[in-house]
Image 1 (cartoon, helix red, strand yellow):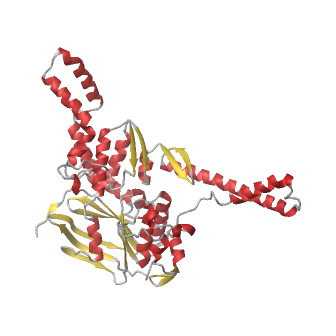
Image 2 (cartoon, one colour):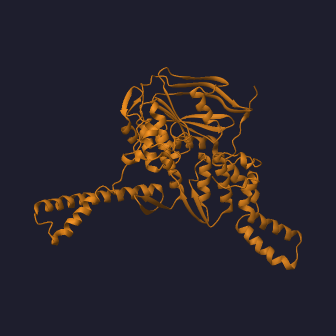
Image 3 (cartoon, helix red, strand yellow):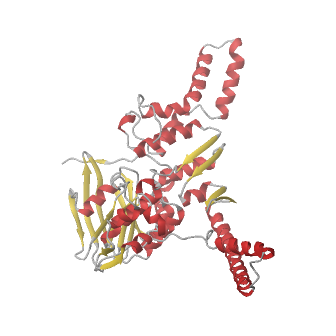
Length: 473
């Protein structure tokens, strides 16, 4: 978790990032109020720095950054913030400090699409060096000029953005494939020689035998393994999946959703987007029946069997192995109406061989997410609800999850801020746009964004704090 000053409110922590800049403006104003020839040189130097860094409107820069990153209210106490809110406050503080080098670890986590778009623009114009770890492929495409890939124990640099990396990576794998073919050919020739030569093991030929052994032992060690995820499904969906009509939902005095109507068709995949706290998870709770609409109706079809994968990873038992946690120790799993060997099911989430015996407590965040996905998807639902399923997943696993959803026989409703992910899988978008309006759009994320910019004009480019209509019961 980011280290924030618990004795200060949100604004106080953000302002720590601009403390030196603010001190320069304050000092300049003091000198201007008490002008003298002795301080004229200091005043001129300060003005040069303030002009070059555009610090005259520092307060508005702070306000814009806080709004764009959806920081909590300026007066909010830091001790009451969630983990995501703390990360946004810390990121805002760091960006405003503008150090010579920025080190960013998954900076787009906990940011909605509009905030990420603002961050991309900010970083493209950044004067310093930026080193970042991220699995957000849109972000990589729009920000980076170099990519360092960590692959099978090696760091491989590529010049260019994510799209360029894909092309260069494909060429490299093709070259490796040709080298692997050559290795196979050499192995076959050496094996033939070893078998055909009775005297091969004499001293003068031991070097050649040793070379063959090394070549054979290297076989498969550097092979690229592809992640794979299989989503089991239960019974076939009927024509009616999910129908929402005139839905209103409030939280306290805020109207989160007003007049929402849509019908989810069979085979549809809905991407839900919007700022944190907008009401996305509340919509999920209404679909599962944990909450009721204040007005309107939400009806599931008779053939629907729900599967729900929430964000929580805390329920995983750290002392169990991957296989035990996912399978509950069963050799055969019931997946809806079908059955499957538990080892095969766990393997379908890219836990193979010895990986299934790893302790859950020793796993990375992405591995824990895969365990959680595998465990939750065992129900074999034909309408699955996924709440931020892409968090902490590496690029290969992200692609595997996308392929799994595209091949899924049922329907899915997915809360996600990953724009590339939504571009690949979504047939429809539900967007929480503010003022209690939720937009139902047919198309993927890129199609929705083009439509939003057409509807909103220049205002679509400026992230603002989410506002709601008042609700009175």
